[in-house]
Length: 233
Ligand SMILES: [Ca+2]
Ligand SMILES: [Ca+2]
Ligand SMILES: [Ca+2]
Ligand SMILES: [Ca+2]
Image (tube, rainbow, N blue to C red; front, side):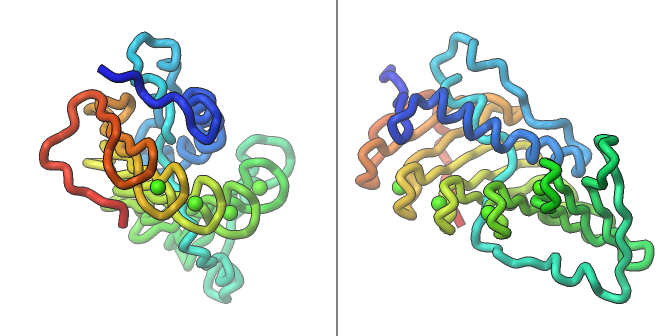
């Protein structure tokens, strides 16, 4: 078996994943908590023996980023119909979570997770279930990570890890559990890495990597599902 690719923009995969993960984990956990699912793995598995663990903590857990939707629907917070309830969930005396209702109907939850006054997480609800979650990880006012729910469970996600406005990360879920991550590591718009998750969505069981970005896979590790045809959207 070939050694897995251990570099990612000059960093080892491990350190790259760790830094990506640490950026995403709070959001991921929060979003999954909203959906009623357990938080994403907080993997200590980087210490474990399998060589695939280089990837496994990783990736990115569960949320996803998306630039595309620079939407900002927050604007209609001021609708006459809506009301906002503020909460101080971390008990520091300042509100950090807001629930916006239309009458009794929950429209969205907004969060300021770092206490800077900006609400970087917005979770949209429909019929009482989360429908979409957006995160602005670099505080530029535009979401760069988005998680779509289906029937209240995570369904797919898309993200812009390098904040260039173009998606480079996609994740797919089955029954609310992540089972495939596709990445565009060199940010040229073409996917070049695929990671398949084991049942449970916490460990990677197989990966395919196009290391020189010529569109042809150079490295395959583990057993890739035969019928896999999913592509970034
Ligand atoms: Ca904030
Ligand atoms: Ca952003
Ligand atoms: Ca990008
Ligand atoms: Ca690429």
